[in-house]
Image (cartoon, rainbow, N blue to C red; front, side, top):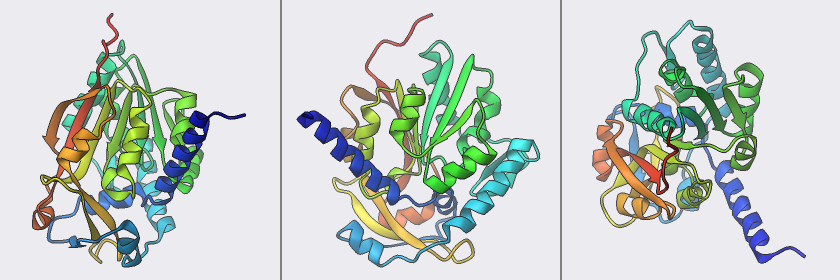
Length: 289
C-alpha cells in the first residue's frame, strides 16, 4: 500500500508536467525579452491563465527550433562566439551577475559546478559562458526543456559536459545540481510558484533567477505579451510577478544573497514592471578545502 506522501509526490510531479506543457520555446521567450520596449506590447490585465491563453496567437515551434539549432551549431563549431535568440555574435559577451552566481556556486563546492538550466533552450547560457567556466575543475551543464528541444540537443550537441533532459527528476537522477538557473522562465509558465517549490526541494547550493518580470506591488498581474511582427507574429500569457511575493516564496532554508537589475526593457515601464535577477543561497556551510 502506497503512502499518502507518495501520492502527494505523484500529484506534484503531475502538476510539474502541466507546467512543462505550457512552456514556450525558451529561445522565443528570450527573443521577445531582448526586444526594445517600443517593439513588444502588453495587454491586460487578465483574470486567469485560461482567459489570457484564449486570446493569444500561436507560433511555429519547429521553425523557431530550426533557427536556434543552426545558430547553436555555429557556436559549437567555433564559427561564432555565442548565440542569443538564434542570432549569432562574433565577439564574446557575458552576463556578469549570472556568471558571478555560477562561479560562487562552484567556489562553495571545491571548484566543481553542476548546473540544472530549466528552460535553457539548446544551451544558450552554457555556450555564452563556457570559455570562463572551462577553468573549473569539473563542469556539468544539464538543460531541462521540451521534448523536441531535447531530441535536437541530444542528437547534435550533447557531450560529456552538456546534457539534455525532458524533466527535472531525470536530470537529478543523472547528477544532482549544486546550482539551478531559471532565466526568462517564471513569467511565462502558468504556475511559477509550483516550479519554485520543486526547485527548492532539490537542495542545490545556489538558485539563480534571472530575467524575471516583476512589479513592486503586493499581487501578481497577468498580461498578454505581443511579439512584434518583424520577429514573429505571436502572443502569449505573461506574468508580472510581485517581487515581495516572489521573495517570500523561495523554499525554506534559502536566503536572498543578491538582487540586480537584469534586462533593460522600457516597454515594461508601461505596466509598472521591470526585469530583475536574484541569487539565493542555501543556509548550509559551504564545502571547505
